[in-house]
Length: 117
Image 1: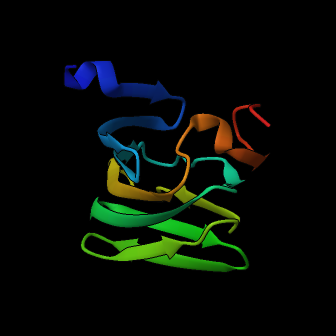
Image 2: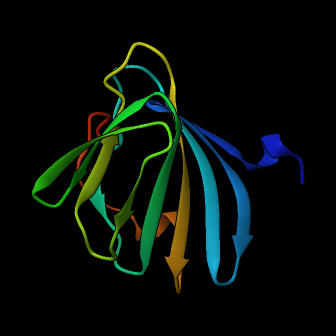
């Protein structure tokens, strides 16, 4: 499978699946300037986000964190979360998912800028 076979474009940017194993999944996610992902939660997985470049505003439950390259945050299973790129250039992060299921249908969207709730 080539990289393009594992790349999925969305209104906010795109992601590439780097690893898809029974016990974990790894994505490289790029968020365009001024864009954000849906406010969401997962019932069957936790996530760890590591910022590669750019800046991110991460919402996790009732807190908001500003992250730069080299910083990371853990998203526990069931936590309400989202990431936004407040900068003027692309932002990229690595997402490591752990749990017992990694399908896109484990995304419960609570709020979405693109009408996907």
